[in-house]
Length: 288
Image (cartoon, rainbow, N blue to C red; front, side, top):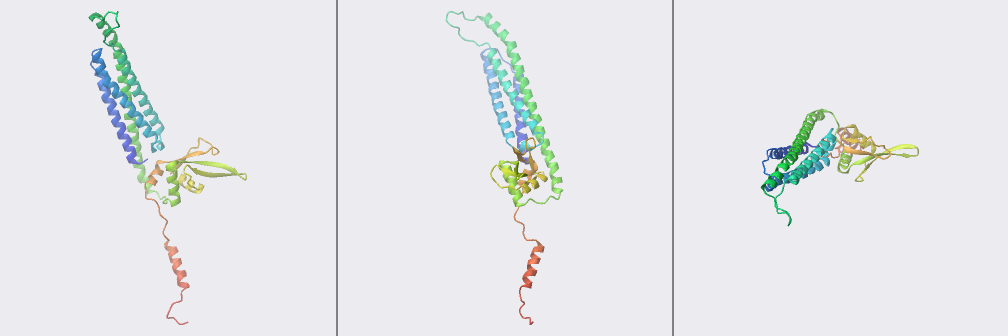
């Protein structure tokens, strides 16, 4: 996963955490009178909570479909964001329950006496503890949501720092450059993925690579990429059913480099060709 991608996700989660904190403060310090005033005061909070729930879902889907999933520990990060989604949804439910417990004022059915001041006061007095409990629960869930977003943003930032720290050491190694075939195979696997299979032919086990986009990848090319840590195969499944191949963060970093071109003739090859040409050419102006 590239640094800009990591940075973008971390920034978005930090902004989401701040939004949850702001809504938490509004709910905690809410002042209202049961009835119409409570409806007007709580309604905007509910709409904001629902918007944040939708935003959290968007962040979760974006993170789940990004190369972040190849970062070690990313499963815990995704589970953390899913728990934030649950907490945000519960906060919306609690605010809805507060509105449900709110004593509304209106005209009764014909034949029923209208509420007098005493009855209205009694209804409001009975409703306040219920509404207060629901609002407190909503505030608690919003606090959990903010904490979860901060936790995940910090984890992504640390992963970014680790990537930056590892990059110089990776560059210092004497790894040979990717060949054109290796680069094309890595690009194919990053684009569509693939699987590693083993089949039996004439009693011998034959291992092959099947790319989802039908690109032909030799087993030698795959092993070269795996040896350099550019691809990873899921060994939790058998080779008979196929082991899923994914491109690692290091592999995506390699794809960000310029595409290799065919190597020019070496100096030795050039010298050999020149000597051969000299032997087959008769010099002019020389008597034999």
